[in-house]
Image (cartoon, rainbow, N blue to C red):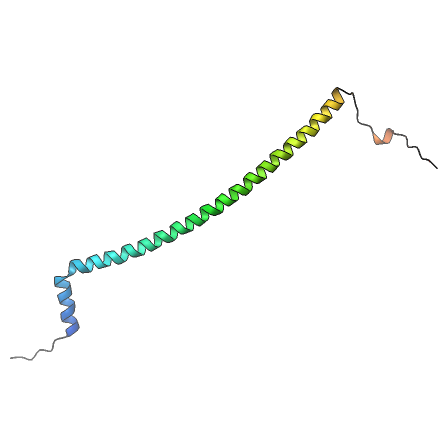
Length: 105
């Protein structure tokens, strides 16, 4: 008989490959899908945070829009008063150069 020197790691590797190839394939798939799941959750959290930032920005812009509408309406009201005073009351603008100043001493 010949004395063969067997390498234990080689024997285990060959046994795993021959008998458990499906298990190895499934373990590799589980690891891949785990990393994909982690990546997907990270993207979802990032997008949720980004959506929240956009909603806050939209609220700020809506508030600014309401303030601008109020300002526009108040300016329209002033121009309405001015128009009424000119048309109904026949008021006119006075040129500062054509006025006479009275000085009391």
